[in-house]
Amino acid sequence: MNKNVKRTVATMMIAGMTVSGAAGVYAGTNMEKISAYLNHSIGFKINGSTYIPKDENGNKLAPITYHDTTYLPVRALSNALNTPIRYDSKTNTIYIGTSTTDQYVLTNYTAAQLEEIKKAFAGFEGFETAYAPQIMINGDVFQKAAATSDGVNLLFKNMTVNVSPRDYSYEYDGTNVTLSNGAKAKWYNIDGTDMLTVKVEDRYVTVSSPSKALSKAQAEKVAVTVTNVGAVQSDMAAVSYTAAQLDEMKKAFAGFDGFESAYAPKVTVKGDALQKVAATSDGVNLLFKNMTVNVSPRDYSFEYDGTNVTLSNGAKAKWYNVDGKDMLTVKVDDRYVTVSSPNKSLTKAQAEKVAVSVAKVGTAQADLATVTYTAAQTKAIKDEFAKFDGFTAAYAPTKMAKDDAFQKVASGDSVIFWFKHMNVQISPRDYSYGYDSTAVTLPNGVKAKWFAPSEVPMLTFQLDDRYVTISSADQSLTKAQIEQIATGVAKLK
Image 1 (spheres, rainbow, N blue to C red):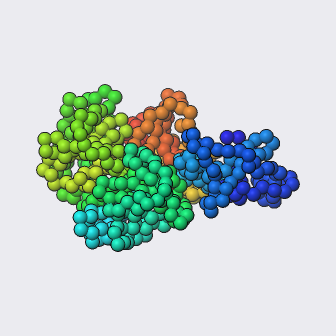
Image 2: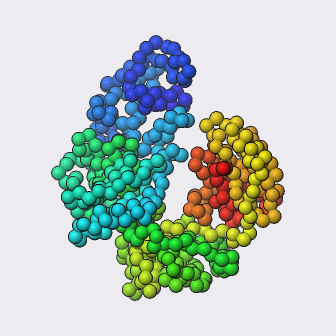
Image 3: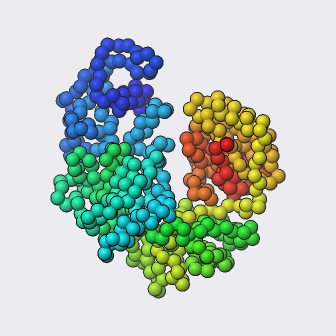
C-alpha cells in the first residue's frame, strides 16, 4: 500500500466519507484537503455475492474516485471480508489483520471470578458446568457474571458472552460461517448489534460487542475459546524443578537428533511431584505422582476417535481414550504433548491447564545471576530511552550468566545494553524481518524466534510495544541460557 493510499484510508476511518474543499493543509497535521468524487456507479461482489457497503448506522457508502484512483470504505470492507482493522491514534497507524495493537490476551480469571461464574451456572439443573471464554482483546476486562432466565451472561467491558441451552439465532436471518476450529456458526443482527452464535458441546454460545469494539474476526476468535473453566486456579500449583531434575530432563531429550530441546509442564495439581524422567523409543515421559506427560515428535492421537477441544491459549487439542485411560494431545512448537492421569486423580479441566503450560524448560536457574544496576546506571538507561518520542519507558534485562557483567548502555535507532558476554537490543523495529528463522516458545510462554544474520545466533521476541534481540558475540552463552535471560527483560523501576 503506497503512502497516498494509507493517507486516504486513514482519513476515511477517522472522518468517514466526507471529502470537500480546495487544496490546503490543516495546521499542525499531515492531512491535506482534496477535491474528489463519490462514485455511486461502482458495485461490489464478494465471493460471487453482491455486497453493499454500509456504515455502522446502516447508511450506504460509496467509493471515492480521486485522480483516476478509486478508494474503498475500508471499515465496511473489513467487516465483509472478516478481517480485523484497527486505528492506533498514538502512532497514527492503521493495522489490517493482526497487529501489535490487535493482540489477544488470556482472560486469567481470579479464583473469586471463577467462583462467581460457577455460582451463576449452578442454578441450572443439568446445565451446571461453567463455561467461559479463555481470551479477550487486549485492554478488555471481565466485569461480572449474571444468570438470566435460561442462561448466563458473562459481561466484559467490550463484549458480552451469553451461554444458554437455547439457540437464539434460530428465528433471525443471518450468515452462516465456519470458525477456525471447524464449528458452524451464524452471524445475525438484533437492534443494530451483530451477534455470533455457535454450539459448544451441549449449549449455545453467543458473542456480541454492544460497544462495537470487537470486529467480527475478533468475536469469532473469542467464540472458539469458550470452554469448561473447570477447577479454580487455586487447585493448580507451579512446578519448581531442581537443577538435578532439569539436567535429567535435558539428558533424556539430548538423545534425539533435532529434538534435543527439553520441554516440561510449568503447572500441575497441588500436591503432585515429578518422580522421574524416562526416554522412550521416540519421545520422553515425564512421570509425576498423579500424571504422565509424554513429549514426542509423533501424534499418537491420530489413529483414535476422539473429541476436538480448544485450550485456553487457543491451541487445538484432542481427547481420546486408550484402554480406559483418557488422553489429551496437543501440538507445542515442533512436538506433540500428551497428558494423562493413570490414577484418574486429574479432571479433564486440570489436564488441559497442565497442557497449556508445557514449554521449553531451558537452562537450570543456577546457571544465571540477577543483574543489579547502580543508581547511576539506572539513570543512564532511562536517559537513553527518553530520547525516543513515544518509546520513553525504560526496559532492561534482569538476568545474566553468572560470570557476566553489565558494562554500558548506548542508543542509535534503539537502545543497546553491552555486557561482557552478551548484547541486549531493545527497539521499535523487528530486526529479524527478512531472515530465515526458527520459532520457539520461551519458558514463560512468549513466542520468539532465532535467526542468524551472520554466524552469531540472535533471539528476538516482542515485549509490549517493542522488540528485544539478545545475542552473545563471544558465543559463551548457550541458546537455553539466552532464552532464560529473555524471560527476565522487564520495565525498569
